[in-house]
Length: 162
Image 1 (cartoon, helix red, strand yellow):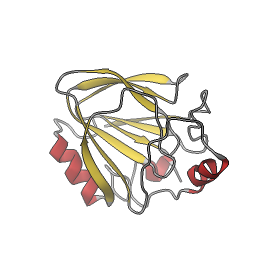
Image 2: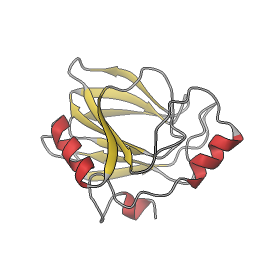
Image 3: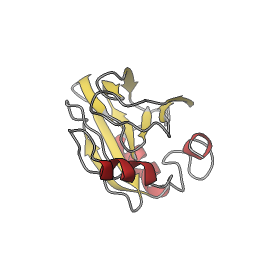
């Protein structure tokens, strides 16, 4: 597994999270399925696990950090708002998006499926407009999760977010 990190500054109406980098895990789980990601996220204390796709419109979450694991297929995601960066993701890849980070699906294979989850006690909302002062305060005050959704108590966000 290799981990890339990138910090996104505000982009148009998307606040992003200038304090925490987006983490891109290439081949987070070799030969992964959606069930493999569900199991890893659950074992590492991430909750609210779901399976689906990624919305085809720009949005962000002000109340939670989010992990996304590609369980099947491939997708081209725009991360970081309208002026962000395009990432090509394939089965086995994962992303950790700090609260406030914009994301949008630009296109995916017919078999694309993603598994998402959130740190315990955090709740995702779907924001499609500029953040209020209260939302920006929430984004900046959310605690760093106690475990990484893939690596557990060692590695990953434990190294890059602390």
